Structure formats: C-alpha cells, structure tokens
Length: 392
Image (cartoon, rainbow, N blue to C red; front, top):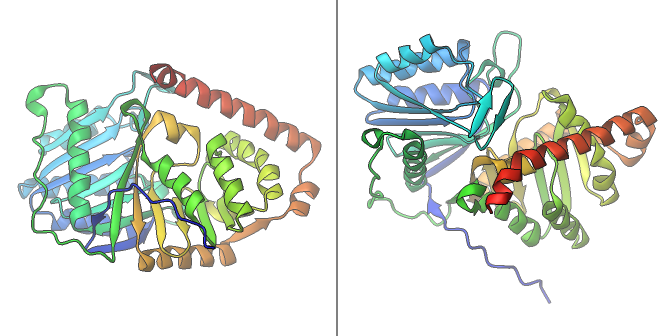
C-alpha cells in the first residue's frame, strides 16, 4: 500500500515565467537589465551592498532609473552593509533613491545583537523579481580573474512578484520609523491568471514575528520525499529537528546528497560543519565538497518536481535570528533545471567525501579542532538566539 503523503499547507501563487539564474555575470546582467527596463518602482532589500566595482555599477543603474522618474527603495542590513561610506549613501539619496538600513538591537563594527535582514530580494514594477542568496558585491560577481562565489537566484514574473513587492513594502515600513516615509500597501493585481503548471510559494522565516515557514518547507520535504533530495548549503549545521527529518527520510529509502563548501569564507564554520560528517556518513547521506570557489548557494530540490531557493541556510542562525525569504517552487521544469546544474557540479567540480577518506584524512588534531569549533559555533548560535527564545 503506498505511503500517504501529508498535505502541504503552503499557499501558492502563480508565475508566468520562472528561470534559474547563476551568480556572477549572469545574475548581474539580469539585475542591470531589470533596473534599466523599470518603469515605475524598484525595491531592493539586500544583506550586503558593498561600495566596490559591482556596488558602484548597480548604484549607477539605480541613479539612472531614478532620473527617469522610477521610485526606488533600497533597504540594506545595518550590520552587514555598515562599511558603506556616508558620501556613497548621500550620493544615492541626492539622486532620488530612498535609502534605509535595517537595524539590529545593538551593533558595533565586529559584533551585532538582534535580527539580521538576510534576504536578497529585487522587485521591479511589481511584475518581475529576483530571489536568491546573492549579495551586491564583487565576490558574488565575476571580476577580473576572480570567479564569483557559487550562488543562485530565481527570476520570477507574474503574481508571485506582486507578492514579493508586498513583503518589501511591509519590511520597509517596519524600519521607516517616520509615518510620512511609510509606503501604502498595494492591491493585488487582478489581471494575473493562475498558471497551474508553475506554482510558487513565497516563504519567510522571522522567529520574532512567529514565522518559520522555510523551516517547515524543509521538514515537509524530508517527510514527503519518495526517491531523492539534493541539498546545496553554504553553512550546513542542521538542528535537532532537521537531523531527525534527514534520518527518517533515509530510513524510508530516500537518497540524499549534500553539496557543501570545500572552501569557506568562515574557517570556524567549516570545521564545525565537518564535525557533522561522521553523523551524516553513518546515516548514508552522501557528501560532495565544491572545490573551485567559495560555495554560498542555498537551494534544495526533491523528487524532480519541488525546489526551495533563497537566502535560508540550514542552521539555527537562519532558523531563529535572521529574516529570511525563499521561493518554494512546485514545477517539474524548474526542478529539472536545478537538478541538471547540480549533477554537472557534482561530476565536474566536487570531491566526494567517503567514510574511508574522511577517517584516513582526519587526524587527531583535526578531529579535536572540529569538535571545539562545533561547540563554539553552537554556543554562538545560542547567544544570538537567546533573546528571541526568551521572547517566545
């Protein structure tokens, strides 16, 4: 008797068009093209906006759009984008761009306490959107001889973009403070027709606001997968519920492959992640480490029809301390494009970590370093999430 699938509670909207975009030149060409084609409004909400060549190129495109009369609302994370100079910000404002910072409860240059606005959203005219894990910075672009960090976004057109615009307005208003700077909510577009073959759920995590939709998406995928899952995650440190979900899926016969970072921008996090390898391998979860550059993508696909893509990392910072946004896509064509890219990356750019290799290449000192790193990172997660757990 076939296993009864649990019904999903996700509210899907429609997309007239949905395309997978790789980080680097492809993403930034798409972004600039969207900005240049804008007619009424642009919302950009981004974790890192850097004052480097890529940031300046995007800023110039935004200023040109503002000169055409396009209303532009740029919201950056107050901690991650604090290196922006006052001159750069004033130049944006003087050219008609409305600029704001998402502020945590407390921050200094090397420390913050409170939520991060970690999502990466671009919405143009309420009709097109980009959602992924890509920040506006040279490291996410192909610059000179330095290839971009591996990351992805979804380019969406249709009703889903209007939903993204509503979320951008809501987030902007939370940080506006002054009532006069708040934006009116827009009515949904009545002329959009639902395309049943391309359904998109806009999913959010914000523990303070009682939203844990992306966490539920992953847990739902673990419960409902029949054959296989591929998860690409840049800082993979699953909590207890995620580990339980992974383990139960494997016991049902689901084949799970992880694409993780071989090189990481945060060495401590990579050591902590490798401490998990023994548990993962023991539970027959295959591990592939990406070699060419830093891996920064956050994408998972299941059974050739369902995908989640966005800013959410599989760890407790994303689960409890950050504002995150993913698209949950129920569409075979999109899932096939994601899986095709993943298969190419696994074959060409990854090294598989087997049980024997991991044992033979991990000495006593490395094991001790991984153990210490794991508990340091876990303690850090606890400190960052303690305030919010107390609120809960």
